[in-house]
Every structure is written in C-alpha cells, then in structure tokens.
Amino acid sequence: MLTSSDVIKASGVAFGTSGARGLVEQFSPDVCCAFTHAFVSSMKDTFSYDTVAIAIDNRPSSPAMAKACIGALKQLGIEVDYYGVVPTPALAFAAMQDKIPCIMVTGSHIPFDRNGLKFYRPDGEISKSDEEAIVNANARFETLKSLPDLEINPHAAKSYVERYTSLFKAELLKGLRIGIYEHSSAGRDLYAGLFSCLGAEVVSLERSDEFVPIDTEAVSEVDKQKAKNWSQQYNLGAIFSTDGDGDRPLIADENGEWLRGDILGLLCSQAMNVEALAVPVSCNTIIESSGFFKSVKRTKIGSPYVIAAFESLNQNYQSVAGFEANGGYLLGTDVLINGQSLKALPTRDAVLPALMLLSVAGATGISKLVEALPGRVTYSDRIQNFATERSQLIVEQGITNPEVLLKQLGFSGVVVSHVDTTDGLRITLSDDRIVHLRPSGNAPELRCYAEARTAEIARGIVTTVLDRVTRLSFD
Image (tube, rainbow, N blue to C red; front, side):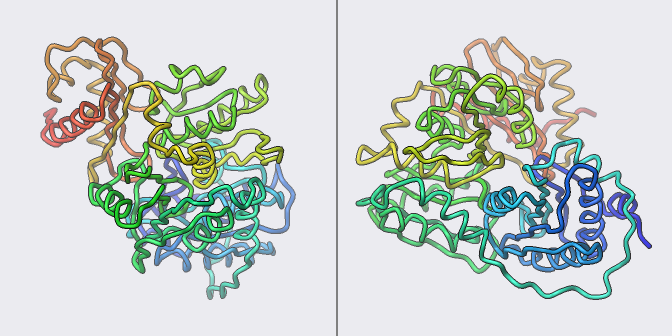
C-alpha cells in the first residue's frame, strides 16, 4: 500500500497559483492516484457525493493522466462523468450544477512538457487550505494494475454553450465577422458554433495538431503580427482565442490589436453593471480611477485569492465579480443579462468577457471603447527557465533596498513613492510609473509587469528590466 502524502512529496509536483503543476514525467500513474485519493479524502468530511467529473486539455500527456485519476476513483467505488476535451470553465460549470467535485487535467499555458491537475469542490475552486489538506492527506491506495478506457459524455460541452447562447438573441453578432484562433485550445470545437448561433460569421484560424502554449498575459510578437495580418486579410471585426484550457481569453479588436486582460475585464464588468470587484494587484489602476465601481479589492495573483475576496464583498454588494490581468473572468454572484439570470461561476472563464465586450461594441468597434478609457497602459512579459530561487532573491533584495535595485535595473533619478509586497515586488515611482517583479507560481519563470502613460513607455520598462535582470549578481 502507498500513502498519498509520501507519493506527492517524493514526486516534486507542487501547487502553484492555478493547480498542481509539474513535468510530465513527474505525473506518473501513482502520483495521479495519490492526488486523486488525497482530494477525495479532503472532501469527505464536508461534502456527500457518489460521482466526480473529469475533463482534459489537448496536451499529449493528458489522456493518460485522466485514466489514472479515473482508475483511482474506481478504486474508491466512485462513479465518473468523463467529459473529454472541454474548457476548464465548462467542466466547472457542469460539476457545480450537479453539486459534485471535479478534476481538470491541464497545464493551462505552460509548455507541453509540463502538465497539471486542477481540483474543484462541489461549490467551486478549492482554497489554499484545501490545497494543504490534499498535500498532507494520508490516504492509502494500491498501484493501479491497468488503466481504464475513456468514454466521453457530451453534457459539459452542451451545457456550457447553452449557458451563453440562452442569454442573447440569435442576431446579437449579426454582420460581424469573427476570427477564431483555434491552435490547440480545449474549447476549439465549441467556439465556432457558439458564435455562429449568435449570428456571427466565423473564420477558423490556425488549428494545430501540436500543443501550443499560448500565454494570454505575455502575447508573443509572432501572435501580435498574426492578429494584424488576419484582421486585414479576412476583414475581421474581432479575433477570439484562449489559452490551452480555455479559461483565459485573448481578444483582438478590429485592427488586430490584442486587448490586455484587465482592460477586457473592466469593459465586461461595466457592461454588466457590476457593483464590486476583486482583482489582483497586477491589474491596471484605471479600474479604480474609472469610477465605474463602488468597491475594488486588490489581492494576490491567482484565482483562489480573487475568489477568497468574494466572501466579504458578497455581504455588502448585490453583484460581485473579479478578473485577472491574464483576462480570466470570475463571476461571484448571479447577475441579470437581458432579463435572463446568469448563474455565478467563480472560476476563470473566457467566453463571458468576450460576449459582453462584443455586445456593447456593436458597429462602433472595440477600439473605440478602449480609447474612451483613461490613459493608463500596462504591459508584461517573462523570462522562462529562470530559477525560482534566483527570482525570490531579486525580490527580497528589492524589498530591502528598492532604490538600489531600481538603479541596477536601469532607472536613474527616480523617487520611490510606494512599495507593495502583496505579491512579489511592486514599486510605484513619483512620476506614477509602476514596475512589478514576481516569480511565477506555476513554472520557473520571472514575470515583469509595468504600468505607464503610454504603451511605449510600459513596454520599454519591461524590456529593459528583463534584460538587466539576467545580468544581476548578488554574490
């Protein structure tokens, strides 16, 4: 017999900001079984259920991991609803309506040589305390002798599409040509039909048989140019895409310019008349300065922190939502749209912000909505394969003496007006420029966020900082 906590500890797999993540070779059948048994064990004292739902993304490693998880559940006598390849929010929504837990096999945007497991209670995403309970559970189990076959249930895919098509009239997007950048997104087989049902003419773009690690928070220069080219070539009013598991949107306007996720979330929230927001510290400060919302609560980066902030906001406001700089939108309360009730979905979703943006943009175009906002622009990028220990050391040194770090990063003659250590090191300068360094919670990466008056200034900050970071030495 094996013990889940021992297997998990030995695997090297750890929880980040969005589930347990690690290299593919670390997710052996025993490790997947250990996490599954530990998850069930951590839920047994709070919830009663006899079924668990499972879905996967399009990573080559995901089917085998799902089989191991299903095998573990069968060891426990638990039934399984296997929904195949669907977006994470589709799985979460179906499971929440059925009041059962679920497991999403996904590594989101991280490279294909890595993968992950994301867990949901019957009432939504697990909390940080739930993560600790899973890691420390001492569930006993046997090594699987064989892996089960996978039989797909289409329920989650259908209910997810119906969740949104039922809100609007069929002519909502009539006359609009939308490009769907499909790549290897888990939702690529759903999106064209969904937008078509609402009247749009859909152009499918660049479906890939290989996994493509799209990061909606650090869009590559190649993808930026692709969007501009597609917009001109096909005369598109918008381009829609997502990350690998379909919970983070990537939207381009009629000119092929990708929107920042926090701007998308801001416009979506305004369109829905949301009263109160919870957003990570990395989001654009125009969320507050816009004056659209009664309350804005800042959190650490990661959906569990945004969701945790909903509890207090829900006590004081009728409509509550949240979003991240990567674009993922979380609906904390039920809301009314066109007289129809949209159920809360407190996990990242890509479709809702896209539809709300398109519904208010109309014939005017998305770019006009963005131009009407106050002039504050954010930009971010990352250094991949950058040791987490090194990232943490840089942040620690910056907290101790931010002026010295800024000088090493290329800033001269600046005055620090505020230092925020909510998540990483976020420094506001006296001229209102912001530079933010943060080690990734999912992979060995160092992220840099910047905010300034123009895109050029923000981009310049990030480019310079990341270049200089690679040459820093604290020996």
